Image (cartoon, rainbow, N blue to C red; front, side):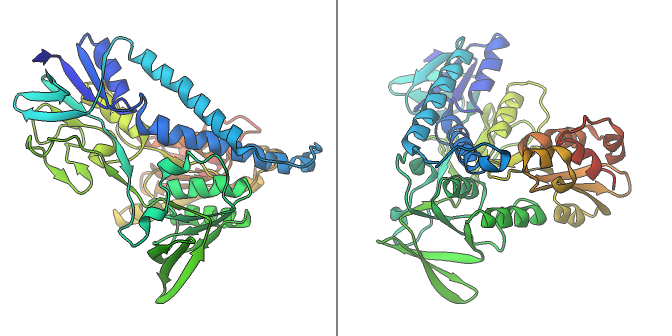
Length: 438
């Protein structure tokens, strides 16, 4: 039996920061990883998609260069080189994760829980025990249970393509589906998004989601909303029903982006851990499961499938002082979308008397100078206290702009206080201040 102070299963954004923080506290830590350091986010998620999103942005900029007085000639895409660059970035960051874990024992292999009391984790023939175990094993893509589902790629597989298809059908209009739709459309692929809900990005503010859909539509992306995909056939044909009628889409390639499910280590249920359809059930403040000393952070607990949420949860689990709310989220499409806190509908449903503040990029000098005035800032405000309840942004650098508003929500800064704060001119941040004058 190998004794440790902490065992962390998984070295993704939920696992490795927690392990490093615990080691800095003087604890003896072992990380068990079955794959590559960095987990899904680094190897098959956040980072590779952002690399390709940047390629897409450059392609769009090159095509529009003449409007800025720069003549470049014909724009061609070497997608293989873009994929090579993606892999180079991932490899560099992977080394960074290894460096962060420099003071932590790392064991390669498949972990399994062999006992909940005392906590024991096996890797091969070795058995480790510790008073605290953190499960940070993330999630994996799911497929619809329909005939022909195997004909579609998941987000893992589409990242390995080295040649662009002529056409792409995306099943699912959530964050992952829209990011790939935006990327491939910018690179000249004919893209169709098929979404089950009435609007794309169901968790987002409906006004922002609609504006993003219309912006992508202007760039050539087609949308079929309120559609249930029923089958896929070689060819590739995707059958669907919408508004009581049947239809089909033909595409050279299909991406199925309909959600992710928790990856739960073997033996977890047998150890007495409560598991729901979302993942391992935990105390949302401490991340401890139904078994004392066993914690679950990140996608595996189903609370919030975002890398930075996983990091915050992992740090909380090892005793670090971290705020878990609000959690900002972003969609790296062109244009970007971002949100934090409550939507207008959620605030009203919670019983707040709501007032809305808005500012468009079309009246912002920096946005016009950049040649990218598509977008707006929308702030949801408690009319009684002037506290900011939620913030929603569509447009250039939305993923960066959201943090001022997210901090305001966390700190209880009022809309009036934020509006009165001096914002540099000309900057996109001025739209945040203007939106708070509600």
